[in-house]
Amino acid sequence: MNTLSYKTISVNKETAQKEWVVVDASDQVVGRLCSKVAKLLRGKYKPSFTPHVDCGDNVIIINAEKVVFTGKKETDKVYTRYTGYPGGQRFNTPAELRTREDGMDKILRHAVKGMLPKGRLGRHLLSNLYVFNGAEHDKEAQKPKNIDINQYK
Image 1: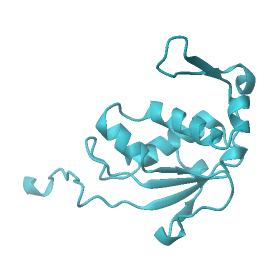
Image 2: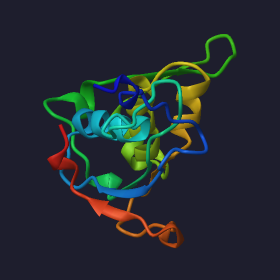
Image 3: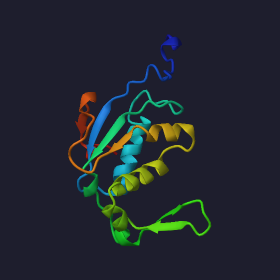
Image 4: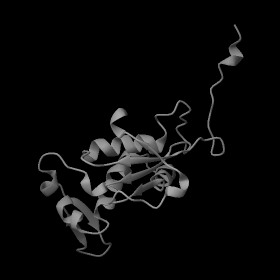
């Protein structure tokens, strides 16, 4: 048997097969949606996954304002941020963030960011995520393909 035929393929930046995908977030639970999006960004669904390389897809989330939280998280969950000044700790709930123009973008990015690797690779992967509140997006030139996020585990 030829053992040289079993070589491990390691993807690099030039050989990565990156695609553009559109995910419809209508009536999706935030945490479950974001865990699948994080796997898409990372490239975990691909057979050529390499842990230290950006080999994932570029993900466009549409209808972000239609995501749902389970239980009482809409009013009881608290996002904490710090301005950098003394006494500058600020608190927001998802219900308060929904009223802001970029609120749903902040909610989904915060959830996906926690599921990506920490460091340079994670920050680079997060830049491949695009969130839009409505059904329209401005990435038509990339010819993204629509996928059903419910078929992924």
